[in-house]
Image 1 (cartoon, rainbow, N blue to C red):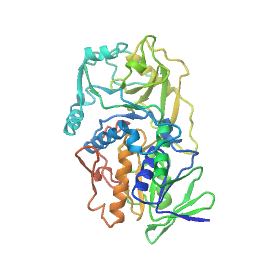
Image 2: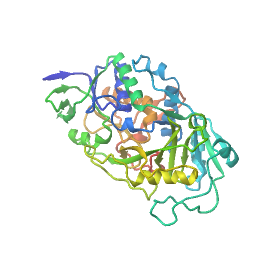
Image 3: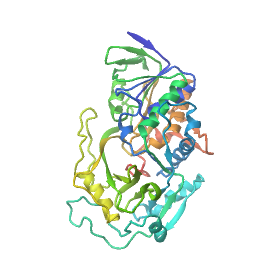
Image 4: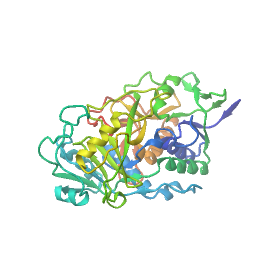
Length: 434
């Protein structure tokens, strides 16, 4: 059986659905294919879905701030109804602790200031007023629970932080993906679930479409790899990895849920917090809970896992993250077997995504996005649609990368920042922070 369309998007996570939406809006007949039963059921569904506007690079920061306005006006951005309702962006703000390791955020503040992003500098008194359960003693360097000195203060205390008011989180990342699916369908796009791409035919250097596990061949002149942790396998099917200097790998990560101490109202007082001193990020969760993730210090494992057969049970890593947070919040009760999720990130060599064409004509990539690109889904969709239009019209994106002008702020992105052929970006945090 053979079908045809103008573009196939492999993946229906938050970014795959956004790419499908923008390609449909450009007038293409678009099909998103996903191996799972619904949009956002893969690593997107396990995302902490933090919306923040600070990154290590100027262009990465600009993408995040441009997308912030779409999350702020989510219904307007979608332009379509969803029978399940719309995902809610909870704009609680993000507090980032100043540490010696992050240069006391001098470079971050300079970057956001160049883009007009509002910031507030908080001293220790303001931190304690907002987060009275916090203990600001230093605990760096981050350790694992079984290491000597774990939990012991190392001298001195945090004395300041930067607060970003234009930040928060989305409580239901899977619903946000479903919202994008419905918007894409309203624009003419289609979605096919429970189907795996098993082959990507290429003739005379040009992609011809995809072959699915049930034998269906879908012809298309454009195929976009947004397959998350499976992105490396999809590139191999197309032979697209040949000229890549940046690669991706599926890395296992854990996020732990812990109850707030008595008397602290997370819904009213909780913030998104990035705390490099304890190497954790924290965000509010329903039921008066916190979600606690790792900011990937050297002592934490970076396990490359099989995306089709990895262990989803929590390990001692989850307990370690909760106990690091308990250093900051001594009244926190950490159960011996906490709840949480284990899933995979699709991670590039420098933790900065690849938004690019490939060496195979018609084959494009929006990969290496897991962990820190959920928030950028709206602008990533627009960027990929513009890039595909540019290349399919004859633009030499490799020799003369597209300058992509953002919709909501006065900035043009140098898309070479996200090239598959770039050098490793030394300015990256080389962590989930991007």
